[in-house]
Every structure is written in structure tokens, then in C-alpha cells.
Amino acid sequence: MNRLAGLARLGLIAALPAVTLSGHAQDNVLNLYSARHYQTDQALYDNFTKSTGIRINRVDSDDAGLVARLRSEGSASPADVILLVDAARLWRGDVDGLFQPVRSPVLEKRIPAHLRDKDEGKGSQWFGFSTRARVIVYNKQTVNKADVQTYEQLADPKLKGKFCSRSGAHPYNLSLIGALMEHMGPAATENWLKGLVANQARDPKGGDTDQIKAVASGECGAALSNSYYVARLMRSSKPEDRAVMEKVGVIFPNQQSWGTHINIAGGAVARNAPHREAAVKFLEYLASDEAQGYFANGNNEYAVVPGVKLQNPALDALGSFKGEVIPLAVVGANTGKVQQLLDKVGMK
Image (cartoon, rainbow, N blue to C red; front, side):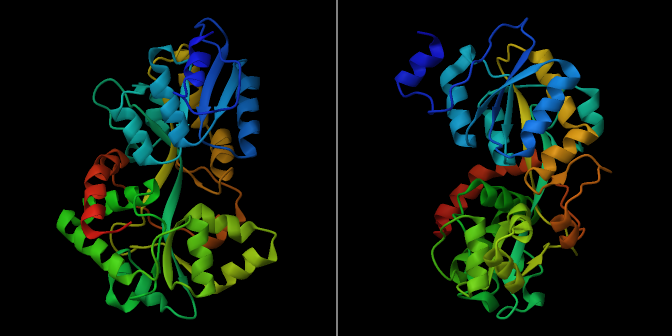
């Protein structure tokens, strides 16, 4: 019995699809652990194989499942590249020692510094390859657009009984609050969270799409959502989804201050990657113009490489905006403090 099978039988790794992974460094393959599951990704991987001759073995799961698997496999892990979908999760993987630093002139030139891990002399541990914005959605009949132009306004008593949210402890919210803590400081962030709790229309539940639909139905007046959930509904062929979007407005917050909060989907080379050279080639490929189009459009996100043009009618309709430029490594580092604040103010 090999090590992976033994770990699986002991229940130490998540139940993931069975694939044949290679641990031999001389093999012309790449073992990819991915939390992304989009139709366009197959074309992304096929094009990489066509241009390099490197075959991709893929294991798909959510972020938590992949991280648990990496921890359990330890030094025996066959993983070469890890793709995760949140800056806080990438930061945690770095802190837990799951990645290795990469020094690449291609990645350093094409990916803005605030969208990759800080370089402490050996290279960056992870890199962002697409971005999404944390927007405010509001009911156009019950909420004045002027009252939801900033994240801070969500805590204003004007919205008492009108704010809805998914769990405050979800990574998307942890990252947002971690960014706000950097912008406003811990004391102001705590007061803001108290205001959110006071303004809640109901206890936090569901995902971002649920919040948008709750705003449309009138259960809530305003909520937070990642921009790609909005774009999905805008591009949907279902009449009920289009009806939802007719009732809600979308705001890119804080355009007159630090800008809208930005999060990423990103990748890293696994700490014990048996095919390191292929892994670095793959990350550099993800920063190419062609791959950026596939990677971002697969989930209605934005490209990280400046100047890359995407063909996405929903994002075009949402328009351009100013995004924050805070280092996401700092945002991730703040999430532990954020969790303490959530517990303190009683936000579920």
C-alpha cells in the first residue's frame, strides 16, 4: 500500500478524486492540486501541455480539503502546484510551511507586488493570478444609493435592520475585515463591526448569492458580495436570475478613499514539489496574456496583469473602479486579530 492510500484509509486526508500522480522528478508531468473548478480551466491546462509537453495530473477539491491533504501527506506529497481562491488561505498555507519561495523575473515583472507574497530575499511564496472585488449590493427600492457608497456606511444606524451577510468568519469576510483593519486601525474596525451587528436583518447565513437574492426579495436592504457572484447572475439565462439583478444596485465602495477591497485566486509551488522546474513554468504560464484570459474569465474575475483585456460583458457593464493596493500578505496576517474581534462583538 502506498503512503497516500494508507493515509486515505486512516481518514487523514480528504476523500478526493482518484488520479495517478507521479513523484519522479525526471517525469515530464505536473501534479496540480486545484480549488478551481471551471469549464475554461481544461483549455488552460491543455494549452500548457501543448506548448511545453508537460502533462498535468489534477486533483480537485475545495481549499480546506487541499490544505488538509497537503498537511497529511507531509514530505511525501506529490503536489507540485497549489491553486487556492483567497488571500487569507494562501497566507495561511505560507505560514504553515506548505509552499516554497519562487524567484522568477517573469512573475515579478507581470504580477503587481501587492498581489503576491512579499519577497524576503528568496522569492515569493505565492502569486495572485486573478482578482475579484468585494462589492455592496443594495435594494434600489428601499435603500438610498448615497447611503451605501462606502464599507463604513454599512454600520450607520440608517441601515438598522437592513444589513445581511454570510458568516463573518468566512475567508472572504475575514480578508475584507483584515484589509479594513489595516486602513482604519483595530479600534475603528471594532466599532464598525459593532455597527454591522446592530444593523443585521437576520443572523448571518448562506453564501454571497443568497445575500444578493435576499436583497432583491426585500428581506435585506444591503449586503456584501464578491463581484463574480454578481456577474454570474448578470450572465445567467434564467429569467429568475435576471429578475434579481433588475431589483438590486451594485456599488464599488470607497472610490473617494482607499478603493474597493480586492481579493485573489492564486498559486504556489508546493514545499516538496518533485517537479519544481515544471511548477515554475506553469506559474509563469498563468501570467501570460493568453492564460490570464482563461483564468480570469473562468470565474468572471479580473486579470492581474496590467493591460490584459478580457471579453466579459458582465464585467464591462459593471464598469471600471479603483481598487485598493494594500499588500494582501498584510491582509492575511490580520485575520487572526479579525477573528478575535468577531468573537468580541458577537458577529457569527
